[in-house]
Length: 396
Ligand code: NAD
Ligand code: MG
Image (cartoon, rainbow, N blue to C red; front, side, top):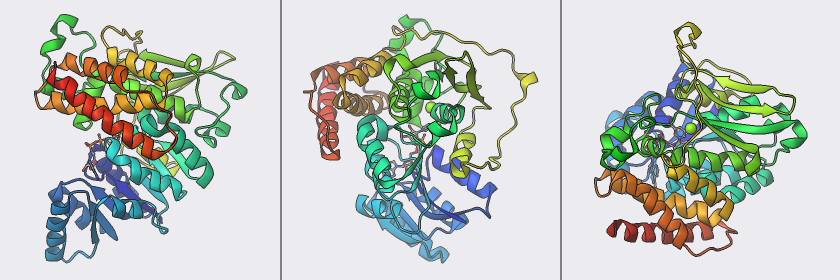
């Protein structure tokens, strides 16, 4: 049995991961669960999966969980705090870690798993956006196996030759005959909405994604296409791709999850229903396959597959992310932090939908460039960028 820790088990990816585990009960054992503050759901997950350890970021939530488990006579040991979570994700008994905490909060526990040489199922894209080089270097050094969970990157990974799959972060694309990585995105819920109506978009409209069911933050990011911007950065790190080796295409049906173009004219795509259990199951079983509980793709029910060029006037965050990567690690870190603050403010009705991109750009343009060498630099920039974003919010 493979022993698994799930960082962010009460979230959208975490729940889907547990659903794949429940589908394959003889192959996986849930060793540890980590969540923020949803005690009710964490109690249920402990009842069903009986992990050795369970951690809540919020100390009050951890205390409440411990009380609940005692009453239910469940023996999982309850932990709290970042240090304990990092120890759990690097525990010597653990084989694989699902990194699915949302945002920069996921950085250190994910890095701890990488440093400990685990099989790391990487959903937390912020890890690569803010610490790309550090993560790739650490994985190379520890021998950690990085497997992308994000559906696009998982599709690209599946469409690459085995030689590249074994060299995530440092694969020589050109030597392998790859000419382009094609990142696809649905374009979100506002692909056809008149631009004049963007300022009045509400949080409820922004979180209603047409194809995917996801957490709130990533749903807003999909609507602004910052999600595709973060994924562009993630892809450049994971696949060691230059700007010229990247292509972004809007594909509204989300059936093709991304593609790889080869120099002989071949294009290899990975397709499926838009259900995160597919890439999750792929990373859990790699290089084998397990059942994910996902409906088979019914080609006769598909109307058409269409493809459109992205329009930067509609999606300024996408352009910002591409520019920020060219600037350097400090800029993508600042952009990510600003975006977390701006999206939270939008969800709280404090700013307009269109303010998100302008706040992000203001922060990236005003942050002082520094060379990012270690995680402390990333944390420093993250903090400064959050402060700048708060100031920018006050002046919109
Ligand atoms: P979510 O908001 O549904 O879940 C987030 C999880 O993180 C929850 O379990 C929450 O309790 C936990 N958490 C939050 N702050 C924490 C903290 N400080 N310490 C410990 N736990 C904490 O988010 P999600 O949609 O599941 O996304 C998770 C990650 O996966 C994100 O980085 C996202 O970009 C990425 N991702 C998600 C999807 C998707 O379909 N949902 C697809 C691709 C990538
Ligand atoms: Mg994605």
